[in-house]
Length: 117
Length: 97
Length: 94
Image (cartoon, rainbow over the protein chains, first blue to last red):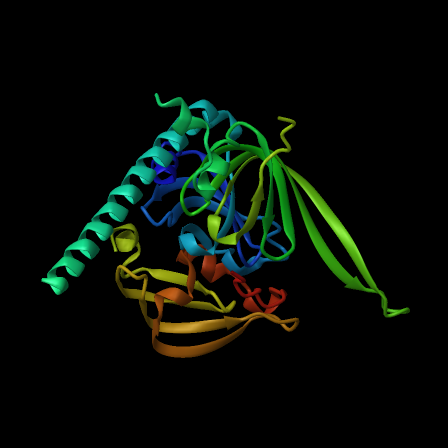
């Protein structure tokens, strides 16, 4: 959720998405979803002469799972807020894991009692 | 806020939480290494790092001697999102205490 | 899939995980990014320019999709495919 929200705050900004096939695509962030799939507009592939595969494409959708890095505009990233959100989300995650564990162990106890009865 | 909860390491991800706002070392798939300051992470180990130095190890073969030459390619990136599925290990900064 | 609805019925370019370029009309798309292309062809890159291979209708499995691009038809018509020299695209390495 943290990164999904973060990317939503960057809509309209220029980013460079580096893929796991070494292709780098620069464009304006148009939209993002929970899987961190990304839509860019007005794109340019870096080193276009060497990688002319998207020469007639202006807008594109990038599957989140093929992304290696995203180069971000540093001036639009509030690191303090990100750090606070990371701590908050870590705490939430831990709470959820604990609840899940407790649920699991309580169902296990019920199961053993019912078999012994 | 519970002081003990904030500072202790109970599970692996706590180690990363304590490295927020500190420079860390990240080993990635395909012989890539990153050094940078950690600003965000989640349970998939997606991260945002700043002032990043990336080192890529490239093995080249010398055409004449057939010897393998290892070359390190470095580049600097101001602000970088790293997708967690490429991460192999994270090492926090060395602490003196 | 909501994000890709604006590309429907348009000419799109699909870059696949194994490094192929397939162009066709986008007829369908689902949550897992399975893609159906109509009247499609593959563009094969080599030292002798781009070779075009007609394919007809193709379903590309979501796992194999890397990028879907909206093709600008005007720009694309102007391309001289025989003069575009490039190595084949590298596959996605996870």
